[in-house]
Image (cartoon, rainbow, N blue to C red; front, side):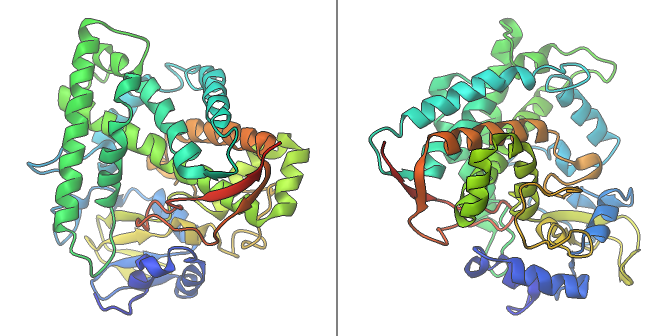
Length: 405
């Protein structure tokens, strides 16, 4: 791929802090073919239609040039987000039975007090400090603790997941011009190690079940059957990665956005009941997942007058669609009370994020707690240093100063 292509510039780390002017450039083209044969789609209505189009595959094995980066001997089989129906529907349904409605409708709501308690404990750790790293001290430990408790991971084992998770996420990095082989190999090995750990823990639950999702996975008995041991490993890895990586970014991006908009921060402090709609606006304005790089047409399709051939890599730029002026009024303005906010922050269609209710709940409780207890928070660096990934975009560190009172 030539160094000056739009996708190269979007994924260039130099533009990580502010990719939005490049998204505006993409929307002007609507669909942009890149020199490697991939197609970028940046407009809201086209992205939404493609996410609901049964001719669009999430399985990279359907690409005209085979993608060797998923699965393989070093890693695990693709998780259900990388599969199509009917296999996607079966695996997602089995995972959902132990996570949410209709089978376990109260699991997420029942976590409210526990999440609030974790938030309170983390904030208590700020006492006596005038500098706090929102990522390391708060946004990372909260969701990883929650998802580990949901799955049934012992507290003492939680720290090792950060190394695995960071390596796995680095393997998703599609930055052009960067040799992906070693990064993907390391990601596959980390994914395998995490999967083997979680699979072993699930087997222990088979003999001695508890009130957690791993126990539910091994004891489930529905019309769609049970998850196999390999499916338990791949599904558990997916839930742990997706269950905290996106929430880390959502919380951190939320704090950064509010500190950049002190009038809106003050508004939320005075009216905390506005927080649910504020979180929806954060999902639109600074989404934790910026793009979906693994969609493939199963037939030639037309998108905004451009023919995308069967098997071509199709990259859906969710964050660009969320700032589309054809869909959102004054899209570059952060408005916590925005109405008609059907954003793409959690995707859409059959592959929409099924962990969205948990991410929303965690973020609402987290931001409410921070606003209540942090005295006069101030950024020490703007923009802050960002994580390498252009897919899961968020600050690597977000250091703030606070007044101790």
